[in-house]
Image (cartoon, rainbow, N blue to C red; front, side, top):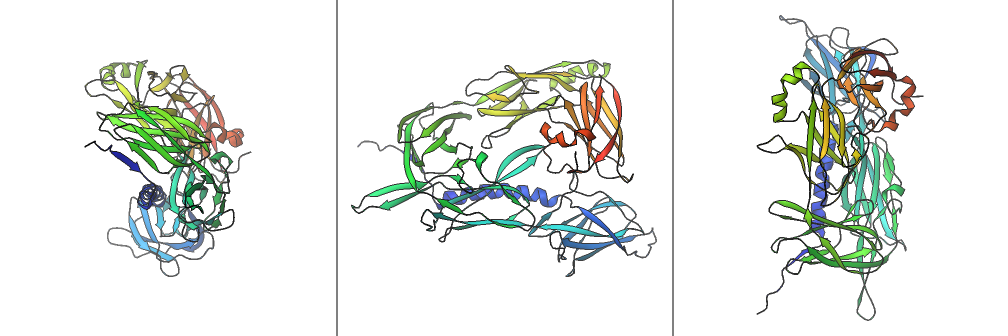
Length: 562
């Protein structure tokens, strides 16, 4: 009896969509958790004195009181959890009028956090807090503001205004992490029987909504089935992310985003895979021209090595195949322009790229020179590759066991920014990958080909310290950003002000623009263009090797640059 070929089928059904929603929801919950745990801004009302409790035998204690309010309406928020942080941790809940009171506090400095389901936090400063509160007999009551969460909702219909059911809808947020802009999926759902969808519990920010793709079967008079489909589009009908309309949400805002989709012919792409083990399956990713993962029916036959992708509307796609052999990831991808059925598309799986990192140290001081044996055990730097494609993963440097060799393993083909993090007192003198200057250029990784990343470190780094002057001469939360000139791919040095003072170490000799901001929360400080509106308020300084520079900075109110 002939052996029936074994076939692995990957079909878009409710179970797979539920799994994808679960993956995206977990990412969103992690992002929201980070926001919720951040300290919120405090606005000192100065109208009500804090109540003072009776002194204890061991010393005086005090009471901190205040009100939790809705930042949009000003209405009080009941049953919000309020917590002091710092030397003393205390908790309390606001009452029906939004009032809270925390007793028994010694004369220390604390910050406050508050949280309540359905609300997010207000950001004021690099650590999302408005500074320290000095507890004492003269401490004023505080007004704590929480931002009501928002929602995006809408309806998906066809060209005749008929509701489309089970259309996948995705939510993408534009966020800033470590001073760099990135895109992150925040939600996935599907339309109900009335074509409606909703993304609730959103924080203020910039969002993009996409609908589709979807395959529809129509029964013809002759009993045959005709397949049409609806392409993957961004609101309000854009084919890709650069031309999509962003949705800017404010606190508590409810925004409608409706789609009208036009039915189009759909096609199939079939072909063969080479380079996989006979008993090893192959997974597939189908990406839009903007890098969004598109879910459509896919099948793969392990014995014949053939695959089929069904229901593709016309457009440009990246077909990506993923497998492994002996624990080594294998990848292959092709860019295809679908205007008709495509047959015999060939994908050759190959191992992912490993990039060796060659680090050379040039010790200029006796202290680091004497530590050179320890340096040989592990280079005093770590490297991270940040991908431009959100579907690629970040790669982190590791030291190979039994040697001091450093390597970036399993790097997907694509474009990256290299994040170089040397240990004090070292700084990066130079870094290259092939013909690219890593300090100023992107790193392009091609499939099956790699170069060593060569890094030169020196130890005669400079330092910079100084004072920060606010408009009222009082200490204020501040973050100092030291931007090398000319600016490149290196992340600026960041330091938090302590009182009116700051200090930064590990600076390479050269020219810098130095800024003191009251708030960098959400600032894209990894992008040099961000600082253009504030350039006239920066201090310009040139540092030489091992120099200890001094500078006086004026506090910059974010949003008030020239």
